[in-house]
Amino acid sequence: MRRYYLHTRHNGTFYVELVDPATGLKLTARSTGTRDRDEAVLKIAEWLKSGVPTGHQRHLRPMEVATGMDAILTAIRKTDLNSDDALRIVAALKERALIDVSTVKHGKGSVLFNDFLDEFWDYEASPYVREKKLTGIVLSCRDPMF
Image (cartoon, rainbow, N blue to C red; front, side, top):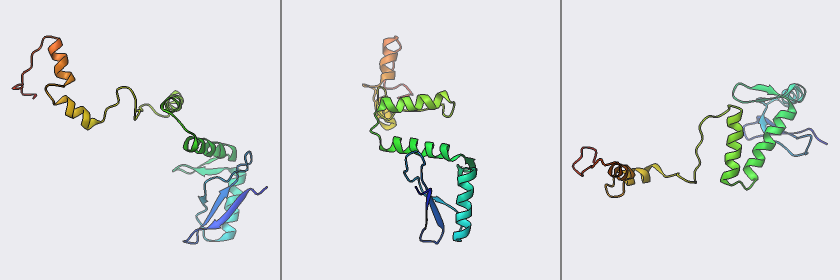
């Protein structure tokens, strides 16, 4: 089985598509940063031996970890997810302290900001005004807030 596929792009730079040894699937193409084929092959050999550079700081990750991450991203992109699945993924990331704040696009209590403002500033429909009336605080339309 092939370990990688090497090709050039329109600018002459060599790109490599590494093959996941577990599944045999090609991973996302990565630039070798060179236009010389021999240098590209040497760089690929080094990646296969030491690890694949990832992230902005180009930390080396072992091939197994890099292929696992690509498999996770592929699964997220191609799997039919619902909001519960997304919340489970976010919860796992929060447990590892990789994220701290998240929002759900559709769900209970999610309102677009413009819709919220339209309702808030409508004296008859405002939840703020309704709450103030229930607590006995009377607001009028002449109130500086409105």
